[in-house]
Image (cartoon, rainbow, N blue to C red):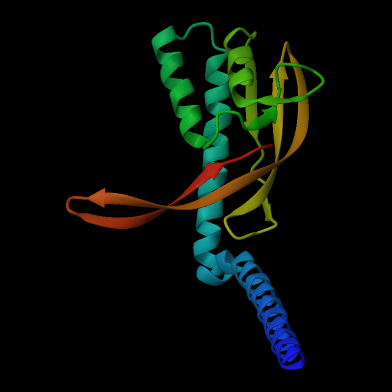
Length: 187
């Protein structure tokens, strides 16, 4: 009786171990498949269009940053600019480069906005040359160069920024459609 019971336990344990390893392989295969989904899901032209759109968002972002340093703009307009900056990011605590300091440390987006509001005027320009690397499941990295003019001194900084790609359900009348959008991430 004990031998039969022991044989059944050994058989069940081996079955459980096989099922567990099979499940682990399945999870690993799914992760590997989804990591490449963005490239497979869209043609190169469509993905490139989303990447170009993210480049436009980066250019808009630096235009907004520049506006916050303009002492001639009224507070209501600056509040609207801050709102638009926050719409470009999903997380207000995303880390960005502090262009108000010469050390170019990384701080949160909200800290940077506060520093821009009290900063002397800064002029920004983003290079036309951008590269898009490291396409992942829901993101890619974009590289570009920012020229900053502060107190008449021009500095150029190479930036690598993460851009997220999201599917968002939106209501159009009574229908819900999936809309794809890009959101800026950390620098």
